[in-house]
Image 1 (cartoon, rainbow, N blue to C red):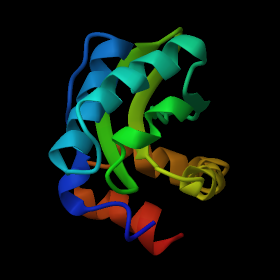
Image 2: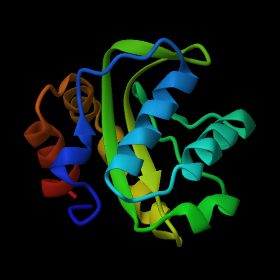
Image 3: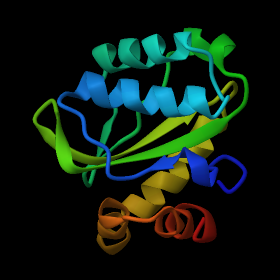
Length: 143
C-alpha cells in the first residue's frame, strides 16, 4: 500500500457532523492529492446510498461506484481520522480509509485492510493514531 498512501493524504483530528460530511471530507483529500476529479466525490456519496461502506472496528472505506472509474486519475488512498466519531448509520466511525481505484486494485487494498482490522490491537492502534507516521507504520510497513 506504500505507493498508494502519501503522508499528505493522511488527515487526523478531523470533525464531521454527518456521514455525508465525512465522505465529502474524504473525497476532498483525494481531490487535493490529485488522485481523482471532483465528480468522484459525488460517486462516493452515491455508493454510500446503495450500500454502507462501514466494515467494522470503527472503520469505513468510502469509495466510488463502478461508473466513477473515469474520474480516477491514479489509484490512491486517503486516511481521515475523526476522533470524536461520526454516526455511520448507527455505527461509530473513527477512521475512514478512502479508496480511489481505476481498475481492480481496490480488491487487494480491501484484503490488506481486512487483515489489519481482524487484529483488534491493530484496529485500535489505527483508531487511536494521532500522527501520520503511526498510520503509515500500520498500513504500509505491516502490509
